[in-house]
Amino acid sequence: MTTLVIQAAWVLAAAFVLSLAYELYRATARAGSSRHDSIDAFVKNNIPLYVVAVVVIGLLFAGFDWAPVIGLIFSVVVIGASIAFYNPKIMIERQPGLIDWFEDLVFTGLLFVAAALLLYQVLGITLQP
Image (cartoon, rainbow, N blue to C red; front, side, top):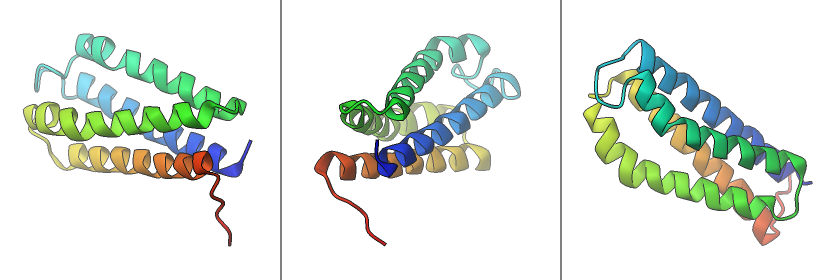
């Protein structure tokens, strides 16, 4: 297993821990602010994504040869969903404040970093000091 894959796994782990904390905050402290902010919505809409994320991150840490491809596809799909669906629909309905925008930008940025690292791995590109 390469350093790029391990770094990507840690970046994805950080992104999804941040997302989990934020979504729990929205489901509890901001409950009722929008139709997306409740424990019920959290369980229905977010838990499946977190389960898939844990599986993908686990595969990356386990070092399967095909895991970087799965991780890259997952990262690109979540980036696409963030840009095409979450930002124009859910984020706007939540009437975002500073915390919301911070989480959104950091989460999506971390996904881009993970995708870049995994793309380097898939293409066989090495980073040299």
